[in-house]
Length: 614
Image (tube, rainbow, N blue to C red; front, side, top):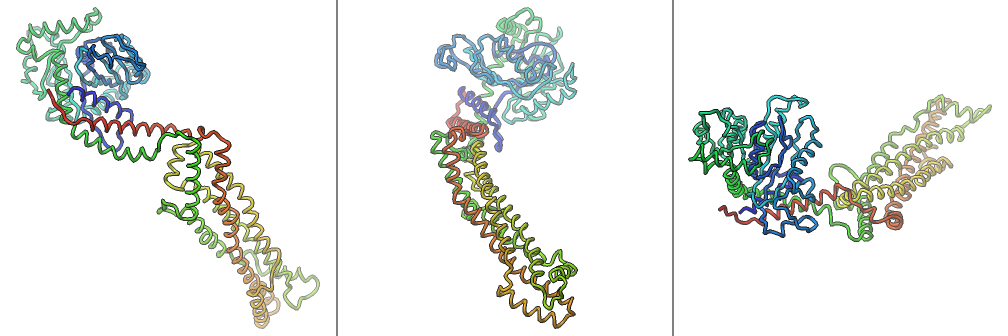
């Protein structure tokens, strides 16, 4: 059964690194709760049999300490090796999670390391942090056990401590004991009123039935003369379902006088046999350690089915996520060519509307370009007034200027050409704006050309930057020729005003006759010019509306579509380091590792079939 505790410890390490995100996982654990100077540290050192925790006045434990005790027989030579395979000769040794390769055989060094990593995070002003310290102690003299030591409960801030120190500590404690799978070890000194114990009060908040609370009564030897803790230990004063175990601690004077943990345990045994003979076999630190070991194993047995179910719930999620990150790259050249081909294919598919991932929230790719041609550009042209900016005075002035000193019998053709050219030139700006909109959409397709391509771009940020750069450069190189062609289309219309156009000639003849019959001479001239301009401008507008999209498609869209893959291969595959381009983003590598760790956790828990408690 005991190896199952190591399974839980492995899961804890994985979850502390990776997190559990969508699925809440409650691991079985023993949480040590007590007020400052209640004897928590002495209890833990007694269980370990070593002096390894920082001591002092005020708040000493300022970060949660996840203490894993691992029973390691001296005969187990295979397990007693360091990361390089060299044997560890010490009977007992320790490792911290933040420096797993370093082996501590001097427990004074363990104490200093705890102090150092605490001050690194919290400073030296007695502040606290919820970030835990992970410590494993390997020894043939301990039982397999995992304990979480929390900062001691305090009411009043001292020194430079924040004013809300009580609230901070309370929140940290509650975050651990609210776990329904945690066993609460409530530590209370025997020389204080047990009925008003703050640790027990907090335990009742989250465990009102007391089903997972075990009380420890410390400092039994410091009670007033003539009194004892018999009623408390027997649960007559405040009953605790899992029991109340009394222990004797080393005092500060004992520590100053270098009294060892072994000597303290011997004194504890003698004191209990003398003072509480009927309870001596159910009290003391050794009994507490065995009880905690037994409770934790029973608790794991009860929690394991639900734990396995929750871990398995995560399995499919992480398998799917891992698939999106792909396998680690082995052949860089081949992988780069495959990615370039997939990207170019996806880009082309987005333009032609044959993408596997159809966007439903907005138009994109080829559909967006079509919308720009027929809706945006078309409506802009339709809304252009052929006579905007031309008053009757402007028209008359143009007519008079074109005749000079002579009086014209008919409307001068040159005045019509001058005026209509001025209006036709107004078609250039919306046509160039159409080119700009299509150019922007072709840039935007890079971010919307298939889920797999997007995932690969996120996985390889350097490659994404270079692909984006190559695409933008290709588009930029085609922007000039496309704009030139569009300007030429308008220039062509300006170059020759075809008054013999079939749609224009008949209209002009009818309108001239009609106007001259119905209006005075000067008003008739204006009306004729206006109607001629309106009719001819409409003809030119149709030409431009038809020709500009064709020019954009030929010079920009189709050219980019047909040449994108070869340009990417030429710029990326031939000129740059494939390995450098395919350097994964740290986030992708980290997430892949986390997914693999979570799958390993699922594998670990799935291998546990049956639990037998001795």
